[in-house]
Length: 269
Image (cartoon, rainbow, N blue to C red; front, side):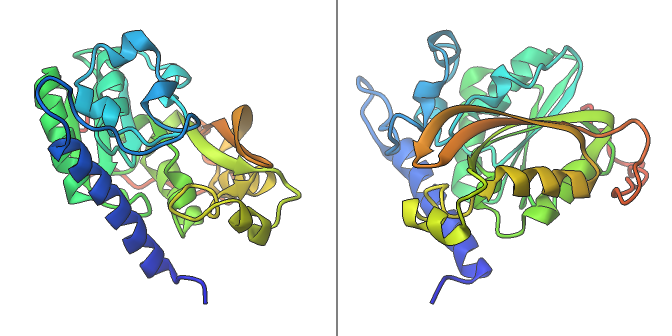
């Protein structure tokens, strides 16, 4: 019998908690933290050497993503960025430097151990325009219309309620805001059963959407200008891909309408 959504979420949480503990407790002072297990299609090796060199070794070692969303999200000075499933903080710290002191980078994660590791990495990096939040990507703890760019690195495929994720991304984005995420996406001809044959859920394979499903999900949430750029294969018929989309400046028919941000939250920090 396949795992139920609540069981899958707990399985994912345990896997990433164990990864955080491995990094924070591994290695010696001379050798550095022990990286989490990942093949060449995932992890810190997908970042440029000059980016890795500017970050704490623990942030790089904890990376489990399938791409580098900060390289494709076109971040500008002063923007507010949200990283879904921020893990050890690698993409949040890189984003914070790109948006500069007048911008802000938020990291959202549901795993206490990853959040603790991310906060430690933030202190080591000396980056101040950052805030890490505990929560799930299906219920983002930020007011509507307060984010300019949503990024994510191989996390949306892990959600068991992807329509909720797409709706929440749309809600928190300001009009004209955009997403630039890296995720695993399947060829359209691969059924869910055939995707599961290629890898498990926590391995970022079984839960992946097809290109058509991904496009339809984003469009139904209200996004426009949806585009995909496959970067490398992670399994037969499965690809790491850059996914981009835009929240229109005016609400579209059927789109989620953003509520007025709460008065007591200044999400520019």
